[in-house]
Length: 295
Image (cartoon, rainbow, N blue to C red; front, side, top):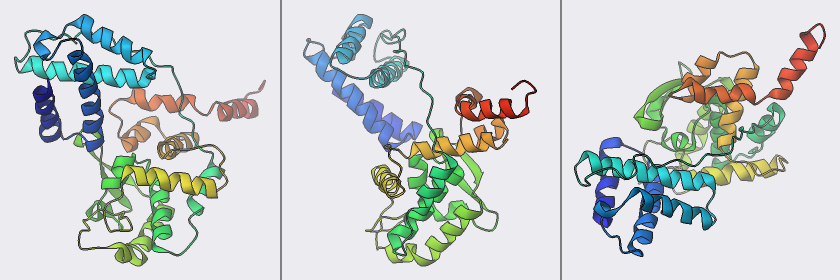
């Protein structure tokens, strides 16, 4: 089982070009299943049955794993056995009809415009790291970037004159996103006054560098967002993806076309973007009350 898992992960890295985080998550899920199956005398993928896979997911749920985590494990098993079946390493795909757990339908919670203004203004100092963090927060909100996209965006991706940035997202798909005046000014100031002070012999072309001159990691961006959220007086614990939610929600509230928002977010399907039409119910209600003759 271990050898087939390594072969599959190599395929994800070299042929699919999937992110390191995705590879690590998939490895963790598959290795957990391999250990569980080994404890039941199953050491080869050819011996895995649909009922064995179902029993594993049931045991994971009983172990206290959330529905989201169980679904991620089910997806990992499905793509793993699909890979083995396509290469004739198992006689039939035992995970072909493996059901995916249904997740509770939760809407993303965006920050308000006032909260976003306080958040991006929170790094108010003139140290290289605070200047960097201000530019980072401005860009996350201005462009709706995923965390991994912010980590990997490079100097050559930014067109200062055109005011756009080229981003490589999921599935190695690239898209151009307008940066906006405030974010562009913050980026220019950072690139001129702070980034040169963070450079080291090991620095690459990534825009955002750590104190040691390396590219920022997703974990560090989480820390940055939470640090300045506390400084801004935002009581709830927020995460970087909420800036992406806020970007989309505020655009939609301002009248932007859903297809344009889809393009800027890099969503493959408009269905994914449509969730933002349900987010700001309070504004919809106030608009109805204001403009409807019987509102």
